[in-house]
Amino acid sequence: MHETPQTAPSPRLSPVTGENRPRLAVLTTGGTIAGRTSEDSRPGSYEAGVLSASDLLDSVPGLGNLADLELRPVFSLDSSSLTPEHWLELLRETLAAVRDPHLTGIVITHGTDSLEETALFLAAALSELAGARHSPVVLVGSMRPANAISAEGPANLLAAATLATHPAASGVMVVLNDSIFDPWSVTKAHTSRVDAFTGGERGLLGHVAAGRAVLYREGGHAELAAVLAKARAHAGRPLPQAVPARLGRVPLLTLHVGFDPGLLGVLGADADGLVLAGFGGGNLGAEALEAASALAATIPVVRGTRVSAGEVVENGLIDDDAAHFLILGDLSAVKARALLSWVLASD
Ligand code: ASP
Image: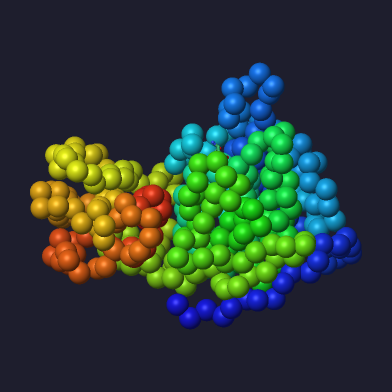
């Protein structure tokens, strides 16, 4: 990947006035950032996605100094309940905002549970429908509900708006806990801590401090475009011209000791594609390899890994050309699933 590092910080947070005042659309989808706990809740329990979009913005001092804000509630859900239809709805709203010449950027509030999948899905879809370097789309969530002690949602939201107004920002990004991540590598790696998200071996895209966003590098736009082109060529699917009616049905199966290879045929029978999270570097074991390779003759099959870091090497231990497997490098299995469901979308 040959991309120019973007080290320039954004201007400090101070009221911006006049014609150059940035304008942001804030799309809200629910999650803990809009969640509330009550005194009689069980410890650790709360309801996600109950705060209205305007309550959410009112909780962030200084936000109005940064930009004019357009509130656009999309849905209000715990992100573990999202369906492919929600993704398409969010894509339609985001695409309309990206194409709006009056908007500087877009902030999307989202639950953290499936945030990394939505980020990758939107990055893939927008890269093909709006071009790799479209205006910034920043996904943001929080680990603590809005009324918890030390709730970090307001600070995260302010960081997201700061990033979305950064002059060098483009494409889909994620912000939590003052850290900026790219959609390819961002991963929820802890169930409860406020520093739950990591960029793994690829590291951070940047950080936010003292009201400024600093970007260390670009967000891997070229790499994502190349991988999408590879997946499309493998699947024989042309570029979509508009938001499709439905996403491809792509189940994800994790290999484990005692895995029943018969599952491949059962799940594959009703699927448009399949992702396998194999052992180690994408190993499947002899029987599953045979069954997966038979399936790959009929639908696209990604040979991925259940390991959290490192790539699946194409045509290494396994002859992927002969087996007709699709290899997506170090993209996680859940994100490979999201990407393939986009590539296999239809009207
Ligand atoms: N269950 C919540 C959600 O993903 C978790 C969170 O937002 O932190 O909507």
